[in-house]
Length: 612
Image 1 (cartoon, helix red, strand yellow):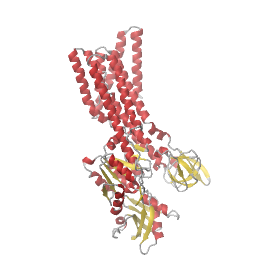
Image 2 (cartoon, rainbow, N blue to C red):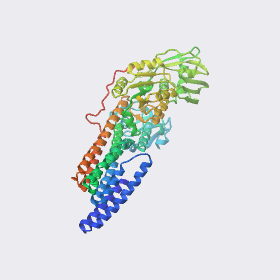
Image 3 (cartoon, rainbow, N blue to C red):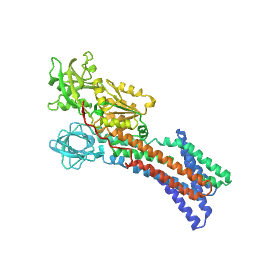
């Protein structure tokens, strides 16, 4: 908006000057008013440039300031005015382009659920979304947004989840199915149970992520600054030589007015914002623009196993109690202890035990990466890894995922699970290698035998198993410089520290934990691992467009400067040509906004599903 006001004032000064010179034949007055306004603008730009230098960055405003001062000094005041209009117009065009590119992101903020219909004692009561509590029954009417995350207990309906996942096809939800906040109900009312309060629900987390991405603008402009110093020096050399050879100071001004800095200032940020909007349309939220640059050059990728390489839809396979315990007892106490945990294994246990009422869990404590402890029906219950539950019991070699249970300090047995490898996993990892990712790793807390079996099926290069969160961080830090940047992909609470440490943390956010999404730099909203490749492909395409737009602008400017050095281009006409350079660079940068023929983004064909 500030740029718009500057443009409006500059144009107003120009109109007044035109009236004075050509209406009242007051050429001196017109020159004076333009010179005065030009001096004020040049001084303002100088102050901004000094602030930029103090922040440790180098900008190309010096060229614009010199061009304005030079044109005014040689009485080419109309050319100086045009330069001012072009600069302020370019800034306004950048604002418009950024706003245009950010439309998809802002649409999410405008549609946040605000009200809910709570069902109590057979009566519906409208409440604020924030007032919905876990366990409340809510009614979602036709065409309404699901207010918070939960599951359906009555009714069947089609839900549009396109704003969350990018998937345009409506998804049928029936009794027992999970529904995400922000999904749009079809034509049938359903009753749901609240599983997460508003602050932890999917859509509100998405809104938070978008707000974070807006608050942290693209940093790629620093790459453009690398070109700023040589570009400025070249411009001064061409202008200085032209002046020296011709002996005419006008030649100096004529060269500088076509040395437009706008391709360096505007094109790269516009391309990055466009790329971020494009990832959003593909069900991917990128928090900061510099993450696109890192993803485009990634050399390593690390994956968690459960819920990432595998589908995370685990089913209980066996309940194996120890002597003195019954399978039903072990399952009931384990499920009761795990009922408030967000871990994928906990959800599977609770779902399996859903036919019988669970008991309240008291003194609940979750030890990240190990398991939970709780008091259930007067029993002290431990559920998790064997060395956490009962370090003295020797580990049994299993080829399935398992958790172990101790009751009142005594090892009570274990529960095994069957998990499916994601159907798109093998093709995704193959595509990552094709995109230049040289080292694909699996970092998992699961057993070595299980991890190796999965890795062999999907094409993992390196496997590290039996890891705690701290071990995952250590493995990420050990990745050598020649294999960086490194991407970490995960979905659980125990992945959050690793996502924060990696050069680029990518969270599978469709069913993953809030902690993982908050720690990540990129969040994939659709439960589709191939979106990792899509994100990298869009990042590469965006960076290519950004660099092209910068180089196109530099090339045009250099050609125009060489032509202007001969005196063929008058200062006034050269100043007008500056806008052509700006427009071409920005329009080229906006190509990053859309998928188009020849784009690097390619669909990934799923491979047949595998059993764990």
